[in-house]
Image 1 (tube, rainbow, N blue to C red):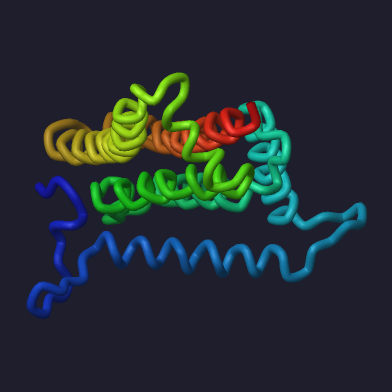
Image 2 (tube, rainbow, N blue to C red):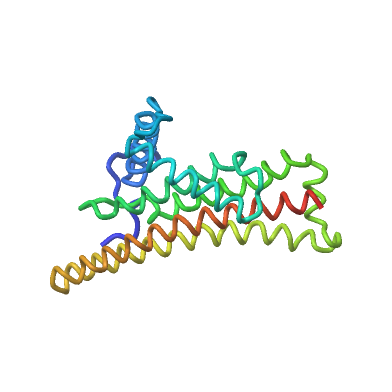
Length: 223
């Protein structure tokens, strides 16, 4: 039994290797691109809206509403980033019902990359809102003594994001694998369903936490 799909090496040349995590990540990216193109190529504003367009509109409106509830009133500025995070993690997790599929979110390298994306997005949106100097001032509030603690907080929450998602997805996959070996068929099926629900919840939590971090720094800049 392997702990991560990073351990399944499909091709290697020197220090360069191609593992299952990379393959599944790129497949999901291509699936998202193809799906987005197919759904949006013929958008209908009439009474008869295709089911896929209707489903996409529900997701977009729900994400837009959640972003506003967190405190980002100009939600459309942040929707592409937050929405992409949510959909990527969601699709990665729900595909775990497919036999032999290894979710990339069960790999520390993938969750770390997602967390680093949030880590970089926070200053990007903060600087875009109020400029570089006003953003940097948030690190010395309420006093300059807080500078090292604020920097440590930025790093620790990035690490927490990566470990939380990785731990939940990896542990769920391992539990199901163990149950398939030692218990009847019906129980692993129920656990797989629970793992699927957990995957949806984890996608929501990750994207909401990213939104909260962005909202915190933009609100601080506006004060």
